Image (tube, rainbow, N blue to C red; front, side, top):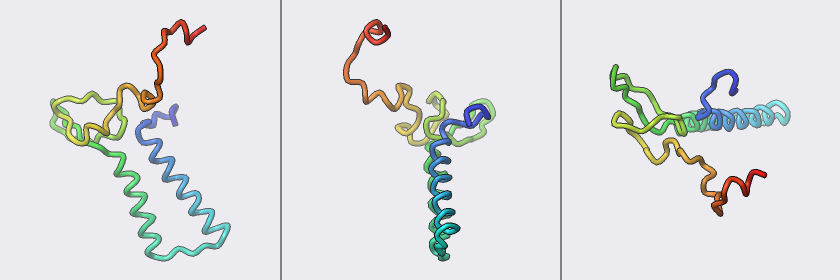
Length: 111
């Protein structure tokens, strides 16, 4: 995925959807489970929700005025033309910063 130029911000959601569809396919073909119409509607709604939850805002290009969606964790600087859920946009320090317990000099870590 990384080599072919996929956006990293959508890989997690896509992976979750694909795993769910894989398990669903296994239950239908290997275990002869039957899907009702309401279950199929539920599947479509959940896949749609997994895709839509990844869009957290909107970017307006100041030069052209075109609008485009901002995906969760997309590498975009926040400025005047950006709207949406700012707290769900990129975390520049990373998601693992909460795991830092002590501050150490680099020499103590790299030996």
